[in-house]
Amino acid sequence: MNSIWLETFKYNKTFEKLDQNISCDVCIIGAGIFGLTCAYYLTKHGFNVAVLDRDDIGTKATGHTTAKITSQHGLIYKHLIDDYGLHFAKSYLYANQKAIDNIKGIIDTENISCDFNFENHCVYTTNAKDLKSIQDEINAVNSLDFNCEFVTKTGLPFDILGGICFKNQAQFHPYKYLCGLCNSISGRAKIFTHTTICDVKNNGSFYTSYSDNNYKIESKFVIMASHYPFINIPGFYFSKMYQSTSYLIAIETNKTLFKGMYLSASDPIFSFRTAKFKNKNLLLIGGADHKTGDSHNYSTTYGVLENIAKKYYPDCKILYHWNTRDCITLDKIPYIGLFSSNLPNFYIGTGFNKWGMTSSNVASNIIVDMINGKKNPYSFAFDSTRVNPIKNSDEFKNIIVQSSKSLIIDKLKKSNLQLDNISTNSGGIIEINGQKVGIYKSLDNKFFAVNPICTHLGCLLSWNDIDKTWDCPCHGSRFDYKGKSLYDPSFKDLEVFEI
Image (cartoon, rainbow, N blue to C red; front, side):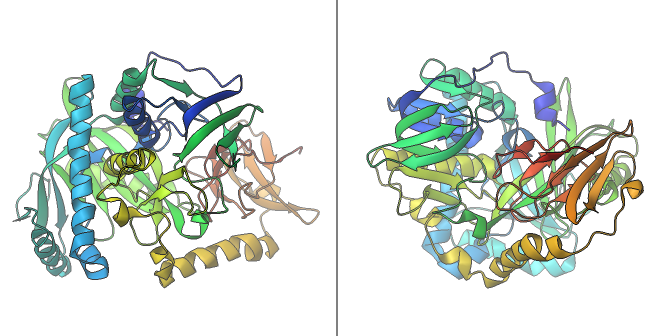
């Protein structure tokens, strides 16, 4: 299910697959918004850069985002002040505010047409119990010398009890922006697509990155920009981060749409914004999120969003629907900086917690400064080697419990599902001679069988009946029904069985 961004704009450039050994100053693994923004800044500084992606540019997280550019990441600033202090919270806020300016600066400098426009962003509530949290957040933000407003009126098609508004935030078409970045670095950076990097080795003064087709990239610096890191040790990001799936629809209506961007203050979280489409605006409604790998159906995901659309816009037509995955850190702060304190010149930006448009620019500037030997004033707030995340005992325990369940307990449970019980265009796990087998039954009644064990760390996969994929409940890897690896951190396909 492609997003409105990928469906409404086609890039006229193609990139080659890596077909030889190369060397460069900086090897960037991942050609999403983070990786290509790093490439943009680094080439401005004269570095020889290579960017590699297992797919086409921007077709995963970047191409499926909501594409809000904002420093208002829910009701976060009261939490940051309470847990880390005023200076920390202020650094987080102004790093993201600067990212908005940086993105606008790139657009203006490179003349990128990407439907960018400034909009206010509001976190609102329709529930009286949230009003104190909103007022506390307003007080917190004001203490950081940043202006925000309490509002009771919006253009939304329903009444709110109150909300906190950040002015002059922004939205854009992320894929147009990404393609503009590619155009701006054309001739100054090498971009390779359909090239999977499967390992990185430290060779003392340089790194060697290995592709799946046995070619090597030697570089002094490496940036892991692959959304979820596929290298497990050191770093141990699999123990302090999980993936969340959320859903979006784009609707057309004859009713006049509102100005601004909106997000509900508490669960269930829903997001609203508009997007340009031909000569009018569409409404984008997002939400219904859940941990990747949890079992859900259409009615609990897209169905929830469609019900909202039809309730407030009875005449609406649903033109697009898509979903995306976000890396969620235990303390809700991105990991930006060194991949590990034991690996100099190897950097990472991940765990953007659903706010990748601004966080990717924050990360790019921090890492480019580190490569240039320059101190970044905001880097301490996002330190990727911090130990604070594992102090969040509840979420850390949840990750350990889920991993143990999928690695051990679920594997030992006997499946009661039989081959004859699998519905057409659906799937599930059966047992054949004591071996668990993942089965998908196609629309034409053909069976596709795979070993339903994730090739990342060996968790038992679950069937996703919405996307017809095998998903990992531990770390969010995904595979199509034929076993092809689709999403990090896995990069190896599943074993396929004859049946």
